[in-house]
Image 1 (cartoon, rainbow, N blue to C red):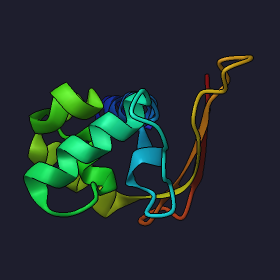
Image 2: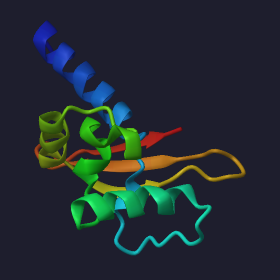
Image 3: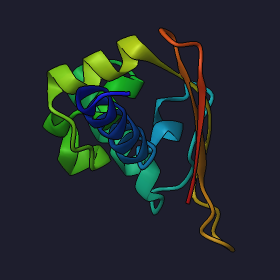
Image 4: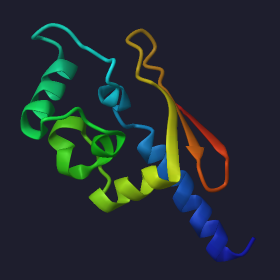
Length: 117
């Protein structure tokens, strides 16, 4: 593997790790936080009020919605990421252990990436 390929792999791994911090449970149409005190409910209500739709995985990473979802990807970077990767499973932080995990599938290489925190 030459230097350019190594740099590309490192960039890909860094981007996967970065993306795994996304609050992807907020893009799940079946997720329904309850109670006015719930921070997730406030975030979803604000997004839906302003955009007339539920957020997508791309929205979660998009820096344009940083105030709501804390994403740090440029809009095109977020779009390109989800053109290349499919989000298979996302386990948000658990209250008791602060464990989270995200499984991504690379559509090009057919590789599975699992990120644990």
